[in-house]
Image (cartoon, rainbow, N blue to C red):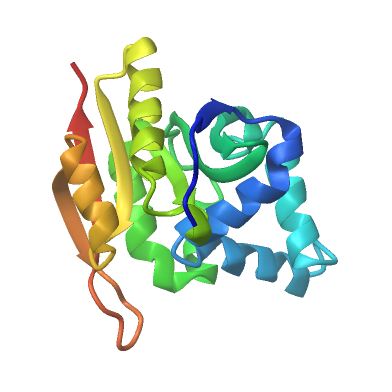
Length: 198
């Protein structure tokens, strides 16, 4: 799909919640879907997709629409990025690790980013890829971090997602630490990447 200019980046609104949930699921290594399915299994939610949309529509959610930016063309959302200061782990982290052991390495790397400007859930819908949208979203996220005087930006990515790793390196991110995936027959590693902001 060839996307024609202008491609604009704007602050997300609550109406973008469904698109943000889909993009988060694409970008989250399967973590988000696992959490949403667990909520249905335990009776916290009735439907996976409805629960996901509600989570991203929540004004108080750190990873929800209030901290997201979307790229769009002709009123169609093409991609998005969520950015925020990584908080200290909350009291539920040990229980989350117990419930989702395959993501323990990811949470360990998240712990190395506390206080950093964290780039979370960056994704572009498949039909819109190849148009430089991911790079624009990274630039946008970094510009917002500099406006707020953060010294370091951070993210976690899978090592075998070579296009994403190459993009982040081109934007000034360096590999800081890696942890092996612990699933059986898993390929690659989890990478922590950081960029020093001038």
